[in-house]
Length: 135
Ligand code: HEC
Image (cartoon, rainbow, N blue to C red; front, side, top):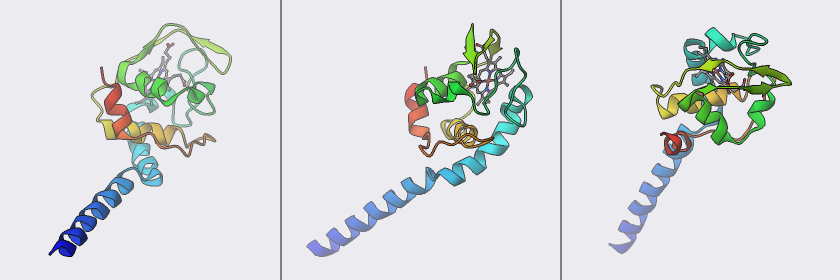
């Protein structure tokens, strides 16, 4: 009896663990993020992520993306305005908050951004991380 409980307990644990790993699987998150980027970000930051110099800052090879994940997540959750320097160019525009996106959608978009156009970041941004930063 005890061992049955133990085995079923272990099974539940395994199940939960594998579900957890799958939903944060980086390649899948990046793939989902592409379509979301096209709908929600591309108008300004452009398909190639290069933005428009002096108006919309680049995401492709942007030094801004070297900041802690928190800063990047908050850019999407809270928007961004005022002066910001990206790759040596000063921007002073307004990016509207995109907090209508779900935690998973924001994580997926940012994983796509962090791994496209020459960007590389093997550390996945997770929906849980986004959730804790919601205002
Ligand atoms: C309406 C245009 C617009 C849209 C849509 C938009 N942005 Fe922005 N974004 C901007 C502007 C303008 C700035 C710079 C704001 C400033 O000058 O302070 C910016 C800044 C940023 C930055 C920090 C600077 C940099 O280039 O690294 C990131 C990261 C970013 N946006 C990501 C995104 C993501 C991801 C999306 C889609 C979820 C998105 N943006 C949608 C206009 C936009």
